[in-house]
Length: 123
Image (cartoon, rainbow, N blue to C red; front, side):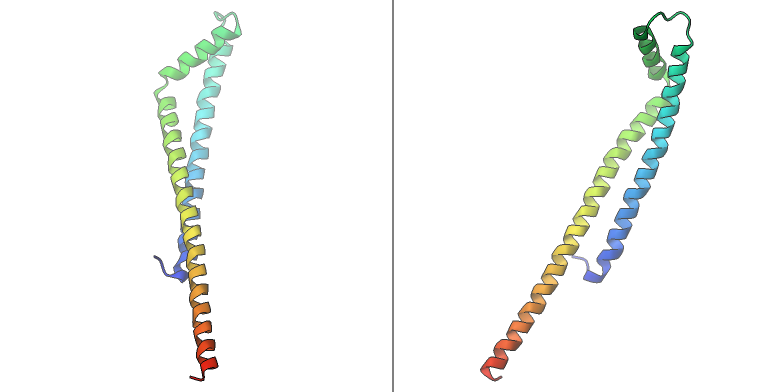
């Protein structure tokens, strides 16, 4: 177990890691949105497409063959899992800190009761 005074730093570092991953996720989402916008534009201006179903199918085809889009989607899934793990680690540290504080309080309470008991006995 970590020393009580080291928990705030560890918790701050874990929170920073969550923020870094969140920032990376936003960047990847922006990239995905660009790819999807380009696919929408390609489908919208294709004069051979007659209805929304054909446009949706064309959009899907455009995205399916776009390797960068597929890579961005894979990255997004990986980062989402990484963020979930980082959040779990952050919560673990916070809970561990709470337990350590309670244990420290309990130790102080035991010391006080031991002192009071000795004082009552006259030691």
